[in-house]
Length: 375
Ligand SMILES: CC(=O)SCCNC(=O)CCNC(=O)[C@H](O)C(C)(C)COP(=O)(O)OP(=O)(O)OC[C@H]1O[C@@H](n2cnc3c(N)ncnc32)[C@H](O)[C@@H]1OP(=O)(O)O
Ligand SMILES: O=C([O-])CC(=O)C(=O)O
Image 1 (cartoon, rainbow, N blue to C red):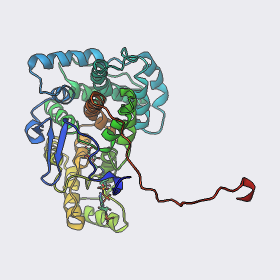
Image 2 (cartoon, protein in one colour; image 1 turned 135 degrees about the vertical axis):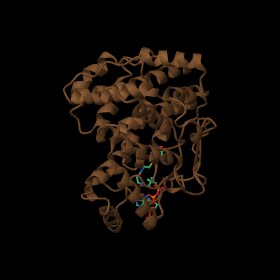
Image 3 (cartoon, rainbow, N blue to C red; image 1 turned 90 degrees about the vertical axis):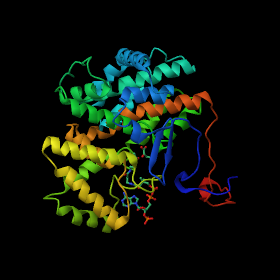
Image 4 (tube, rainbow, N blue to C red; image 1 turned 180 degrees about the vertical axis):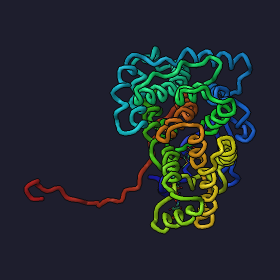
């Protein structure tokens, strides 16, 4: 029996990993030993995928090879195509996309192969397919065709192109690319843990990723970015209204989405980059409203609760300024996190042991069975 239970598994070391690491006291994040501050806004999402899935930053030849794989792997199969017109009517994009991601296994050329080599091919394919699925979903629900992919653009640029229907500005692509890098992996967060638990039963990578999508969706995890945008846009009037709004929410005992973190006791290093990018986009678009609201909200939440913004907070105003619809913010998170999830599934399969923690029983004991007629 376990010695002590930890509510929400806080501080429990649930896996060993060489993919990412966090120092929550110092507010530092590392991907395979690289400080996020050194690589964010310097490497492309494709380089990041290589780093997470294949363990090293690619040289030019390795990057070209991965880029070619990603380009040839992004086709979605007939089963998923057939589902698209049905699932876009379902409640939310994350529900629909969870179903679409699950369906990708049906036509996957490696579906029947559970080897590590097949895992690696499926991992690349899933990263390539995810942005296409989101773009196709967006087009389907608006009754339009997606724009053709531009071979000059990478994953970030092509996604913006397909979502907005317009060729994105160079700086917008750079900023979105950096967002994808910043969200790519984060140790044993809830969705990655979910993926690893599923993978550890020796289940397949599509099952693990489908579970991860379900975990990411919730507002205490990836769903917070959408919730932040809804909060920002619900505040009427000017920035002076923010103080009263925040205090009212806290007095009512409600949490403010985008604040707080299980691991960081100081600023989330990703928020540092996203805050700067949000401000830059506010300047570039000439619309400071949501950046100014966010800055004020950050100050009031710090004064009132001592809480720092997490990755989801400034991601909201950044994605909004980039023209991404609010209900696609969490799917965008999934596009990025697919790289981390798949790397973790491979790592789990490489050195597997079933994940099966203990529980602390709190129910009644020594109950006696009685006939149904006597109950
Ligand atoms: C990508 C990501 O997943 S980043 C996280 C995204 N999620 C959010 O932004 C949702 C809002 N934040 C939260 O709910 C939490 O801070 C979490 C889920 C991120 C971390 O949760 P935990 O480590 O379990 O902390 P917990 O929820 O127990 O909070 C501890 C205390 O801080 C308070 N608190 C934590 N976050 C917030 C918040 N955002 N707003 C108001 N109060 C908060 C709690 O009410 C609690 O107070 P209490 O001790 O008086 O009851
Ligand atoms: O690590 C966590 O618990 C949540 C988080 O910030 C992430 O998944 O990026």
